Every structure is written in C-alpha cells, then in structure tokens.
Length: 487
Image (cartoon, rainbow, N blue to C red; front, top):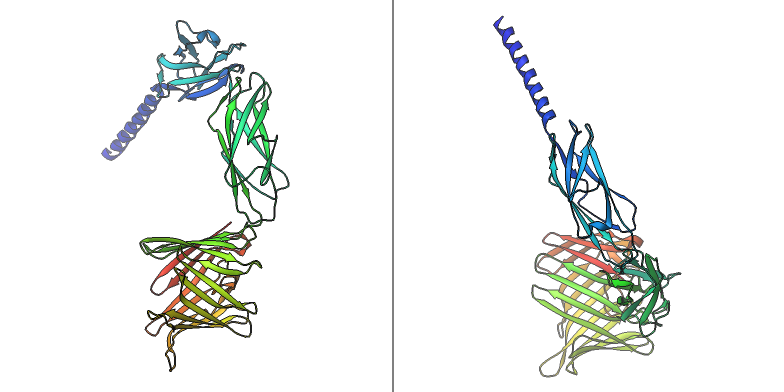
C-alpha cells in the first residue's frame, strides 16, 4: 500500500511540474524585433512596409512605441503618424507581426540622400523589446546625380570570338537628365586598332558614352581582332575618368579586359616540381609570334633560390641556331645535312665545351659525346651517353660512360623507362630543342649507378583533352609532385 501511495504522489508531482512549466512559458513576453536592420529606397518608390516580428503570438492586446529620427522628416509620410517623434503601433492579441508604412514625398528638386532611423523604445505588458531594435532606411534622391560604376571588374574573351564583348556600367538610380561618361583606356600589351576596336569608336584612347535621362545602365562593346600570331594574352584597362553634372563616379571605376590568344590556348606554359621541404624547380615557356619557343625561364630552390632563363635564337629558315644561357654563356649549334651534329658552348666568348651528336637509322639521337676544355687549352673526351629507343621513338634507356683513353669506357649509370601511357607529353625530354625523346608520358623510371637502384612509378591527373595536370612520382626513398600549367 505504501508503494502505491508513493507512485501516485510522484505522478501528481510530475504533473504539477509540467503544468507549472507550461504556465511559465505562456507567461513569458513576446519579443519584438525589426525584420531588417537597413534598407535603401528611391524617393519615387511606392509605400514601403516596415515589419516588426514577434517571437510568438501576442498573449494579449498591447502596443509598441517606435522612435523616429530624421533631419528631413517633413519629406515623408508615415502611418501611423508620429506624435512628437513617437509612433504608437497597436499589437492585436494573437498577432505574430505588426507593421507601419513609410513613403517619401517625391519632388523635382536635387536635395540629396535622406536618412530615417527607427528605434523600438517601449512595449506594454506581455511584450518585450529585442536586441534588433533599430531599423535604418536610406532614401536616394532620384533627381540627384546617379553614381556610375563598372558592373564587373574584369572579363576575358578569345580573340576569335564571333561577337564582341559588351561591357556594362550600372547607375545607382535613373539618371535625372542627359549626360556623358568619359572612359580612358591604357594599353598593356593590347593596342587599339591592332588587337581590338570599340563601339563607339575611341579617340586618343578615350570613349565618350552618351547617357539619356532615365537610364539605369549604359554599355559599350569591345571587338577583339583575330590574327594568326602566338601573342599570348593581352590586357587593356578601361577607367572612368570623367562624368557630366547629372552623374558622379561610383566605386568600381576600372575594368580589365583580357584578349585570349586562340593560337596559344592549350599550349604548354609551365611545370612546377617539388620534392620535400626546401627543394623545388619551375620552368616557364614563352613563345615567339610564330609559335617557336622564345625563352624558358627557370627557378630553383635547393633551398637557396636561383633564377635565370634560356633564350633561343633561330636562323632565317626558323631552325634553332643558338641558346643564350646567361649574360656570358651561350651554345651555338652546327648542322650537317639538316641535322645538328655539334654544339659549342662559349663562356666569355671562349669555347669552353663542345658536344658531338650521333644518330641511329631512325633519325634518333643515339650518342652524345661531351668534350671539356682543360687548363692547358686541350679538349678531353669527358662523358659519353648512349640512347636506346622503342619503335615509336620514345626513350627506352640512357646509359652514361666515363671514356678512358686507350681503354674500354667505364659504365657510370643507366636510366630506364619501361612503360609509357598513351597520352601526349606536354613537356617532353629533349637533347636538343625541337627533337623530343619522350612524346608520351612515362609510367615508371629506374636509375642504376652501381651503388644503388632507384625505382619510381608515375601517376597522373588529367584535364580535358587528356592533358596531364599533375604527376606524382613515388619511389622507395622519396616522392615528388609536378604540376602542369597551360596557356
């Protein structure tokens, strides 16, 4: 019997607690806050509703007091009308929102932007003021000068596009009268009349755009001019530099327009290799207007940083003639029967090294013999490389030997590429420029030097068109990542 009494007593207690909690929630006041904190309107807009939200239905009828602050209150109609700067808003029982309205009295005078602020000041029983208790309304004078800005900071278009690019400038509101906008452009690598034209036409690198009363935007057109040259991306910057009285400058005053070269698009641009911390290498290719390599800029971190560039020179037939490696060193190529058979490297205009090239029956470079200048002026055969190829011309082995005068050469190392992926190599190995020895992507690599064997496997990530975007080389002792870039 005592047990049943105890259970009954606990049930009654729990029921009373639940009722007390519900009663407490019901007695909590409904919290009033503005739905928005700030909004901008034009003085010729229609009546605007200002919404005050309640956190729950009002338990009883009441009212809210809203303070109004403005230096131009006589320019507005507010309902309910404020009395001594206070709006009294009725809150019906059960309501979840209440509102009041505001409308600017439109006029034809240029009297500038006006600001009206509202603050929730007081609430009757059952209501409470929340934290978002201020609302700011900005009213733009539709007769005031319209602020003009570029809609976008930059755009890009292929030079071969069939239609020009329309550049839009936006106006903060309808312009109150006729006017003009002056736009000046500065050439970076793009020249007017050679790389692009505009509509309307430019005079002295300046466009004058007419603006008609009531307009909310204006525009002009850029027409890239197509050519057959490999002239990379060219950029021109347009800047708003003058406006008439019915306009004023906005925030985005310049627009950068880039013309993308269709001949160069997709060509190999650069690769960046990193292995561990502190070691990296980057090569960037720049092209001549006819599509030949102009120079290859290089940067190494080992971990100190060193930079430079190889600059290529060609003969009248477009064949490689020499490569400048620094301000004091260059390599000169010598041909016989259309093939490069010798390379001479000069240091301060003095021959410092020369290289002889031999070819196999398929026309591949099969041997590279290097001769170094000694202190007594003699040239000594110092290194010999032998190259073996697959039937498709991709490198199979590279063997390095140390020549021995009067004896057999001493083997130094062997590099082996056993497998290739059926994808074009954008940055193939070359012994001399223009003669790649790896047209496809290798999938593995082994280096042997008598003391150790290093094996690497290569995995790739690809872009559209089966172009590699990243290569990861993984070996037993180290790994490296190469990122490829394209024009």
